[in-house]
Length: 78
Image 1 (tube, rainbow, N blue to C red):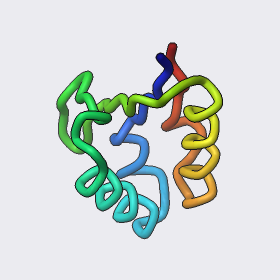
Image 2 (spheres, rainbow, N blue to C red):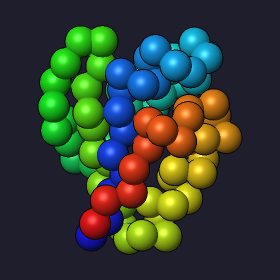
Image 3 (cartoon, helix red, strand yellow):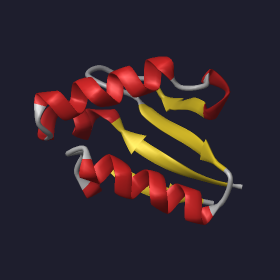
Image 4 (cartoon, one colour):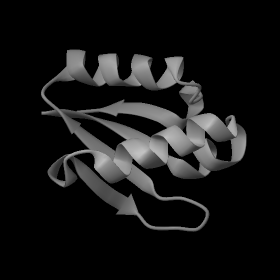
């Protein structure tokens, strides 16, 4: 199974506020079983989002980038 690792520190510090707010809303309303906090920190966590496979992880990465989240905050993991 693949996933997408999201560095919320980068999201919260280096992307437009609208994108950071959108990510927070997405995480809060997404299925909790798909989100795993790898490292908890302030001002943001390192979060892994479980995906069905590499293609889904790439799709999610691309969609988040379209929303304004920088590529440096996103990493596909297997």
